[in-house]
Every structure is written in structure tokens, then in C-alpha cells.
Amino acid sequence: MTQGEIELDVHGHVVAVPREVASSLAAAAAARAGISSRHRDLSLLLGRALESGRTTLSRGEARALRAVIEEEPNGYGSAGDDLLRAASQL
Image 1 (cartoon, one colour):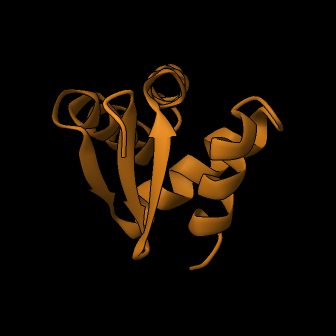
Image 2: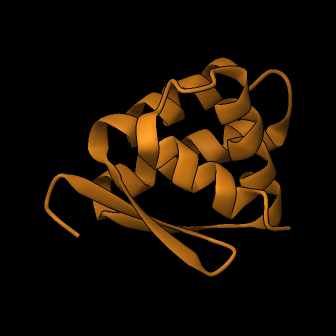
């Protein structure tokens, strides 16, 4: 992991994503916080990950992550593809 990356542990798969992608995902989840508490929790967790450099997602947060990524296909580049694969392994 480089200094410009955040490690997200999704179902035991650690995916290193650029800070910009993590920040974009956090903002997208926050915009959908009214949809479910999982989106809110994901937003907060990603925000903390931006500070600490690493986080582990619960099953519910992984589902919310998958939903956020699927709403903007190809919007998060190869890191989004890696996260989508990891989040889809429920």
C-alpha cells in the first residue's frame, strides 16, 4: 500500500484503493444515507478509513458498497471493479 491508498477489507479480501476513489465512494454513500442506515454507516466508515488508512467492512456495509458502485458503472476505475468483485462474494 502506498501513502495515497486506503486498504479496504471486504469479506477477507483486502483491496487497496486510491484515496480519491475512497473519498468519492464515501461521498456517494453519504448522498444515499437517506436510503438506508447501511449507506450512512458505509459513509462514516470510509471517512474514518481516509484518516486511518484501513478499514474492514461488515456484510451490510459491503452490500451498500456494491449498490453504490453499481449505480455508477465504470465510475471508480479498476479499484471499483476490484471492490465490486470482493463485495459480490457474499
